[in-house]
Length: 68
Length: 256
Image (cartoon, rainbow over all chains, first blue to last red; front, side):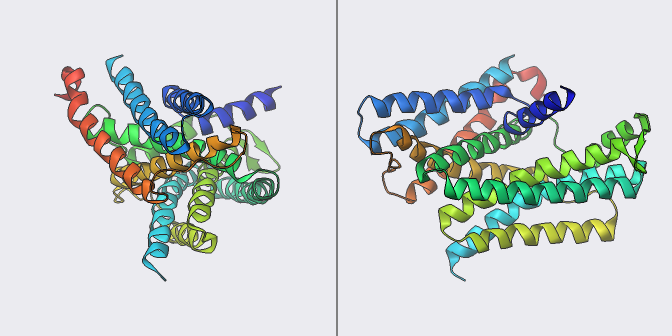
């Protein structure tokens, strides 16, 4: 059990790091972009939307971090 | 070598260099305070585990995953790593976070190592072994992902591996000669640059990889193809400069 906990902790530290909001921002932006893709927007338009969403969500996560 | 290959080598070199410097600081701290035998045993064990991980991950990635899913998985990881570095670089440059200092990191690691209880197994100090193992493995896995992404996206894996390997050798030699953390390295500037690169490549790949969920399963196409990476780089640079100027106004009492 201790090993499993340590193993899980290791991968959490590795992937999420010390600010979970960044990982959440990336996942949320990609999920929204997927929604745009599945809604039928042309691939290039969806890619552009993905780029903009990633930039936007990063800014929001950093601003939340600073305002706390 | 072409300019693109040099660029690839320089990118993997810079990204790996920062990771290796961090791993070296941890191993040095354990070696100095708890003994070199345990620190080096932990390092060697981590390198063996890393080799096995790389072989298994490389095999799984190249034989089981369709290209678009590989782009999504590796791109998302790179994006998270890159944006974590970019966040720290932005906060440090805007005065909202203390600059990273390898000397300070070394001091805190050695202080923790001195306070930890001494427990031995097979003549190896468990604390030093675990800390050295975790540090080297964690930083090493990041290097593996960086090499895979840059190597695959540029279609030149040997150059990417060469860049990372030369960074590893250089840091190792410096550590052997100096026997102290590499504090003179402009680590914050390096991390800022590498964060921008990782965020750009990560965004490019992760968004392309979303094509795995479409009927065709093919990667999405960015307008302008590979040139979109440069556009993304410019956008991340611009947004980070804007944040550096704007964030202190949100928390003026800290910035002063």
